[in-house]
Image (cartoon, rainbow, N blue to C red; front, top):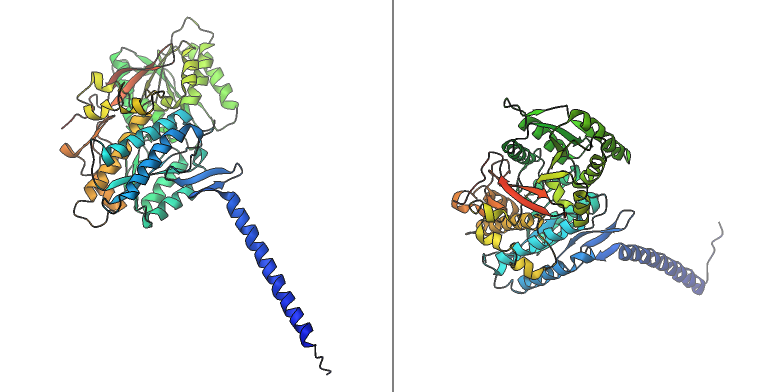
Length: 492
């Protein structure tokens, strides 16, 4: 075999050329990878996900998820910076507020309701860190966005789980969004990782008995029984239920079934027909279903229609009902707390139908004026006209109760961290969650939505439920406080 010997200068050229090609290839690959990563990044902790490039993830307020949130996020960012700067002298832990901050028309929450939630969450952080309830450890408030309809919940929750073991020292997650399959899956995953959770507006009765989870909102059973008690006191005798049958809408399913059990009795309070259903998951068809229901209701002549569906569906139902053939027949519609998620414009549209609309809310600033024993006076004052929230955000009304509920949720988590820190070197999520079950008697949370203590299954005890009425001007007016068992829990 003939041996071929290459001149040294040729060998060097081949080697150098090969190395250069490899370097260029690697550099190109790294460059493309870096460019893709840069394009996917919205800010620290926030990335683009999905076909719509929705910015989801976690921020300390440095990244603004939507323009209308800029003012409140600025306050949160500044308070977080103050907490971090003082970390050497005052310890802190992090509490996240998890909800869909980038809402679309497909979400049950409106931009206004989300903004109000964030304002209430900030108020609780402020009160705990340097206000009238100042205590330790201080609270750093993180904002966690799972995207519209919580489509990207898994990404955001994985990031929350990781924050337990960073300088953020995450111990609790509050908010948690409406009662949907996606949000329940998020709750269960965080439960598996020892994160304490306080839901602010999650009401579906089926969401209970989850490790480390409590809620400050009444359950749908509580709402249905409170609504039923009110209607009976007002001498309504006949009713029918209209319910969304869409799979995954736990709110509608539990609200409707609860009312069918609560309302009928031997005193001539009866349902005049079986539950009438529509399916909001069937695109556009549900609008036709609501339209044709008005004719059936003319035949059945119930005094009350109990609407177990989302607020945005209620507006279409009222439109259909206002165009009914039996204009001489008067109806009263009673709905659930999701009505509070409607915008002022949507409420005004609903009012123009001239149908008498009542609904059970989660909270209202006027609760304290008529039932002072059921609501904490110091907490209620922050939401009253001329209160601190009015000073900070003067153009934002608080009739929807969203700010109150988020405030009570974050306050519960903060007090839990305070109790868990007693004599402990490290505060953990499990430790905070255990304190929820010690919030009884004089240790109950003095909330603006009512005094809070929790059952072993995570539900609040005897939670106050406000009954609200929609006025002709599209405002929510407080009517009275009710409760599942007639009387809410009072101060101990």
